[in-house]
Image 1 (tube, rainbow, N blue to C red):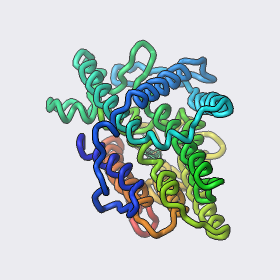
Image 2: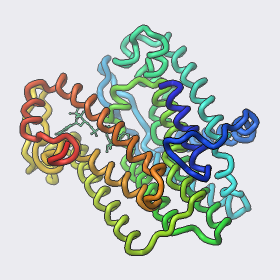
Image 3: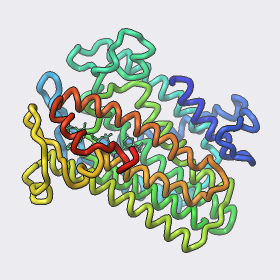
Image 4: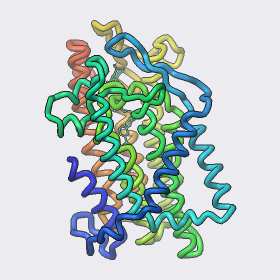
Length: 397
Ligand code: NDP
């Protein structure tokens, strides 16, 4: 995985700009080191990371507490991700109006991805070394096998921090996710410069993915109960995933549209918007219902839902969204993924990479979550599985 993940990312970055744009074929050429290595790209990356750190440290509208840790303590997290997105947009907007050539970013993606990959490796190495001095209670359940390569990949320490600065929480939703939005915007501007105006397909991809990132940052607090924060250590998997994989592969549709413009009629665009709205409705409805229920089961919006009691004192929802399938939020997310790819037409498989990869990721993630829930809730979980037999897609899976 240490080699395969970066190799896949570079493969995508190379094939997307080639004429045939074949997902499964080899790239038409391999870049030399002089095309990959650029001190300007590294500098730009550090300026970007520095800016996001500074925005993270600004006063937050709220400071939230995470779930209880092994030593019974709780960590505190600033909730100011949406504010960071808005302030970044203002700063970039000011820069563009002062002549900053944002569109040129689209030509720096290869060296930027290279600089980010190198940085992720070095960062993960530092995290690994830092974790050697961490107390046992601070280690993640999965990243302490004793095999150093495995532990380097999965992450040894659960919540590595410097003072109150939480590395994993910072990387999870800030530099990569916000960077993705601005890479998309750069591709839109570049398309306008090349062809006179951005295409309808490019507008849709930008708008859909901006909504996704805006939503993740608006509901930032809910990341505190995800597997990434409460279960997974912070190692190469999350550092590379958050910092490099997300911005450079999730922007694949916009990259594809820059190099391979696609005609898109209004009726088809409206149909794709409808698919996106349905996906978002399920995704947001399911995530909010569970978050509200976990925070306050007697909230009027969830108090009437049917539940199964568990030996832990917690309950499991068995009606509403969570009575339809066992992971309705994944279903909504997958429908949205399809809506991001459809504007790219059906002539190439490449822009559907995200749908294929994301299906594999969510099926694997769902299986991991089921194992944990079975361990946590035992008989009550088995009862839930009996009552709600489908995992992600009703009557199919
Ligand atoms: P979920 O939000 O699906 O949380 C799973 C947890 O929910 C379980 O461990 C359990 O925890 C609780 N739960 C499960 N079933 C029930 C039930 N019936 N009633 C009440 N609680 C229940 O986990 P994820 O972190 O995987 O996903 C969060 C969101 O992030 C999803 O929408 C997903 O699609 C998205 N995502 C996006 C990614 C991307 O790259 N775009 C990557 C990964 C995720 P407990 O009981 O302890 O509360």
